[in-house]
Image (cartoon, rainbow, N blue to C red; front, side):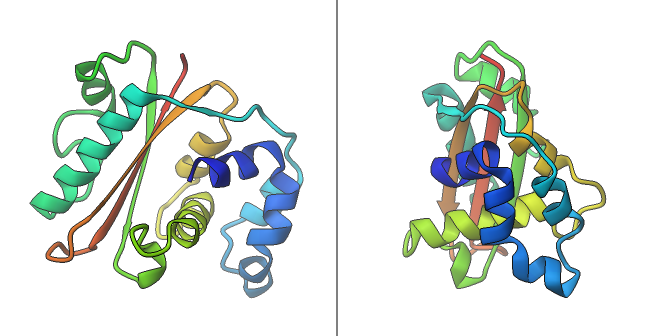
Amino acid sequence: MLAEINFARTKPADYANQRLKSEYNSGSDNGAYNDLTSRSAVNALALNDLLTTSATKYAKYMADHNVFGHTENGTPQSRAQAEGYTGSVGENIAAGSYPSYNAESDPNGAAISFVKLLIIDTGISGVGHRKNILNSSYKVVGIGFYRNTASKFQNYLVQDFGTK
């Protein structure tokens, strides 16, 4: 997942051409292809253990409680602070029941599927997920995945972006 996020950040035009071309051709890319091909690269993110713990706990919480939203158990900031993180936080969440989102059986495929979903902002008004992934103010990220086949979406992803 980190490599996929950093691919989009450090080589946005290459990412668009390799990952978004079919969605662009079908008109289902929500402007992502043109956005990424016109962007400059931003620095790669480093993985942050505190944010990863926060993200993982929240992915598990959503899956176990069959809920989906940014404030189901506190806020992204409060959850990160509870783990000891002191910087500002932005969060992306995604969930899906398709086999392509199952990081347990195919981690690389799930990373591609989830990052594409977030960059396109599928089913969302606006492009906030894309903005988070490509935001140059963010220096670190925590990534959490949890699978619960008894929950509505089965596969839950949380990306917590941080400024420190």
